[in-house]
Structure formats: structure tokens, C-alpha cells
Image (cartoon, rainbow over all chains, first blue to last red; front, side):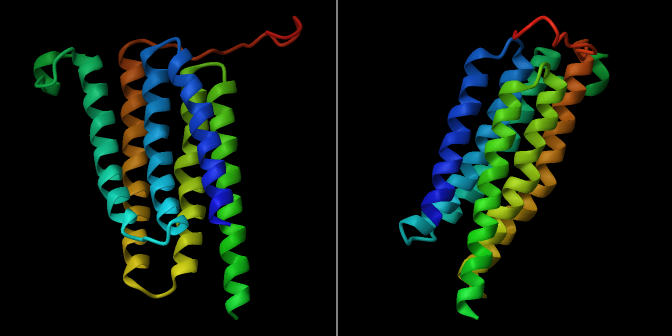
Length: 92
Length: 108
């Protein structure tokens, strides 16, 4: 039963990867990349059960932390053109 | 009792996998970035919620369940933040939503 969930997650990863490659704007790629991060967290957790080693869940926690930070860093770069810019100095 | 828990876990895992595939199809099929964001949130709520809950039911009252709960809380709090940041960044760069899709002209 874990194998079925893992296969479903792999199929979803393949479908989302098509959007990353095709996406017309940068935001489509960011949305699809964020979904790839979430699906990878799920795949790591499920693979821990498939192999009988629940230690994989620690890797999933780390990946979930890195995923949101990476998404927000990329968005801030494409919004202000500078990772160090603040809200007030860059303007709308 | 044990069989009932296994069946509940199987149902939750299968439902979570189904919703992940549905969200991925939505990300491919939807016409513009705002509706793709809507489809991506299916993966972040129902996909993550059902799969992680299914794994928690499978492992019982152990330390593994606590770690899975940490993942659940983390994704539940951070994925709306990421979605809000994406939508706000799109408005900032003047990305306009598609308000009309012509479906009558046969295919794409």
C-alpha cells in the first residue's frame, strides 16, 4: 500500500515537472517548484515506510524547512531584483 | 482492531495519492498562474494532510508519529505563506488573470 502511494507521488512529480519546463512566466515555474518541494517531502516520508526505515522523516522535515525559504528567496529576488532590499527602500 | 487501522491507513494513503495526482493535473491544465496556484493548494492541504495522517495511523503512538506531526504542522503553516507571497509578487509585477477562455473553437 505504501508502494501505491509512492507511485502516485512519482506520477504527480512527473506531471508537475512538465509545468516547470513549459511554464510561460517565472511565476508558473515557482508555483510548480513549490509543489515539487511539497511532493518530495511526502515522497521521502513514504519511502521511509517502504524501506522500513522511518529515519527518512528527519530528512523530510529538513526539506520542508528548506522548501519555503527557497521559494520566498526566489520570489524576493524576482520582485526587487536584490535579495537584500527592504520593503520601504525599494518601493512598490 | 489492527485490521481496521490498516484499512483506515490504506484509505487515507490512497485518497492522498489521488488528490496529489488531481492537483498535478490541475497545475498542467489550468489556464493562468492564479488558477494554477489554486490547483497547487490542493496538494498542500488534502494531499499532505491525508498521506501524513495515513502514515501516523500506521505507526501508532511512537516518536515517529510526533515527527510526522511536526511535518504536518510545518506544511500547514508555511504553504499558505508561500502561496500568499507568490500571489502578492504576481500582483506586484502586474500579472493579470485570464478572465475569459474560449472553449468553443475546438481544442486548444
